[in-house]
Amino acid sequence: MPSSPRRPFFCGNWKLNGTIAESLALATDVRNGVATLRSADVVVAPSFTALHAVAQRLEDGPVAVAAQNCHFEDKGAFTGEVSAPQLADAGCKYVILGHSERRQLFGEVDAAVNLKAKAALRAGLAPIICVGETLAERDAGETLGRVQAQVDAALAGISNPELAKCLIAYEPVWAIGTGRTATPGQAQEVHAFIRARVAAKDAGVAASLRILYGGSMKPDNVRALMAEADVDGGLVGGASLQADSFVRMVKEGS
Ligand code: PGA
Image (cartoon, rainbow, N blue to C red):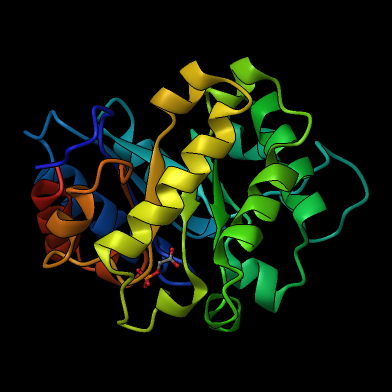
């Protein structure tokens, strides 16, 4: 059972996977699998091309839709980008921002994550802001410093009422897609640190902020992670691509 007083939140991050037909099939199976579950928020994040179809399929059901990125301007001459208002128009309620793959492979910097979070909030989307250290940073004892810098930069200039709409995902880079999960203790240390950092801005917002863990979360480790006081859910990659494992994980963790 989760020990957090906050409602568990699980988001499947499908990354660069799935045709529209495959995404619809997976989304439908997830929706059916959690149909009787009342104790958690469940979200799926398909690729851009499948967002609208999946959002329509899931309309009025218990599963919401997230995008995996957005641009920080609402419109204009930005070839190849997708804006937050366009995502809202497609049926999204959430957007994942600052994922480590975007930071590491596509040069996304903290300042861009901040602008994107503001754009998402303007469009009525809830940002899921990802932070986390590399293995080299952890080994050098820089984990908390790195996470602090990422959290502070991402939230700069965001008002407390807007902050109340955000989620933060702690995703140690060394645990993503590697099969190597942070221990519950390692996750709790960083989650508590993030909550304290937000509490310095607004204690009430910090108390209700949902902080997700991401990095090889699976049905067989979700319980131990969710037993930690400041772990409120998961951002799940690999284990979200099969409906049965994702649904099992959500149920185990709720
Ligand atoms: P993983 O990915 O669960 O496959 O490690 C998590 C993520 O990248 O959000």
